[in-house]
Image (cartoon, rainbow, N blue to C red):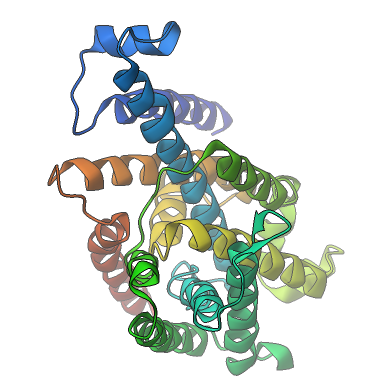
Length: 335
């Protein structure tokens, strides 16, 4: 089993590397592999090619990869906590809460810049955290009587309510902010400036590093609170850590990309099918798999109907919606 895991993991890493360079090359403006390779190694003779690769495609591709990591890891954490493979930030309404928090900041005229930094990720984080607390409490989690089905239904209903709230706010904003609101609802991967991208790298690092050594703890938690307590794990402490990290990752990325759903269901589930249920393996696989999935999805979204771009959130919903229904039907048959 260990050897098969290593082979599959190396294969996944090779696929990621190949996909990264293919996604970086593909676009509305075509270029040969020779021209592309030259631009990467020593720079192209045409400045427009360098601009397209290093200032437009590369920052966007890196943001897509990091967003995929954040969403897939958030989904994996919620699934371990709630013992349900259908849990993820979008289904639980957390992405909508992050988007609503940011839109509320726009509507109330709060300055998006403080001390030279964007404050939108902060409002998204707070929106996501408040939504998590509300959904968890509504489903009985604060009484140690967590009803997972109720939690999923509350999350779906809340996501619909928050999407309507964002649409309402959109209609009372100035035209320049209306376009931003539309991007929040649909989910788009923009080409960030390198300073903004460095912040995204920092947030991802801050969220992922505490999770990597917790594979065994997540294994115990996914088997039930009593099992986790029996092996000396602070269940309440783990829950708080998961809520905090999932809010940080979801909220921060919604501030840049908008609401992108179903990544946290698709990637961890496929990872379990191939690599098993051990979170010591699922964490690194979900990191690579999440980034791979969203890199490819965003590349398809910007090239399928070129020169028109399809919001990547629409594409992930087209893929993830039927996938979610399939898992729901399969879960119903098992019960």
